[in-house]
Image (cartoon, rainbow, N blue to C red; front, side, top):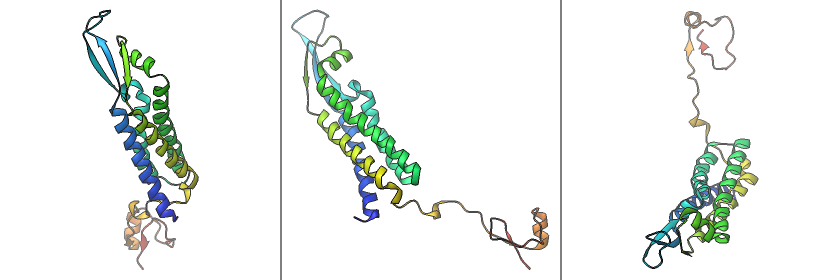
Length: 191
């Protein structure tokens, strides 16, 4: 696979993983039966609890993974590796929060809504696991191969404008007109 294709694939995977985490944590992960009066049986209401209410750090991981897409685009070398580590942590937070929910769903729901009598979970947390795994894979790939991928072109960097000036103008600019221009950022002299 060419470097450009690997670069594009990693960016798409990271973006899809981040979007998947944001969507998954916005879905309902559990429903709880809550009595209208504390301690009363019978009539109650059904509370729907989203993933972001249960695991806020996991929900933030999705937004962080999306921000990492811009970070990978804007950096190079060591900076790109730092962004990859941040994206890796975001994916771990997203997938790990969902796995934690699967293991302790009743306890997590009752911590959010202490009056819950019964708890039923939905499979929406599985999307968070899959999306987090995709973000982890993309971040690992970026860490391993990102330093060889393309970077933003120099045309996006600002360069000083080169102007040719006479000896009199050079003196006005505070330059020594007897020195030769070495091609640096100083304006060249017109003979």
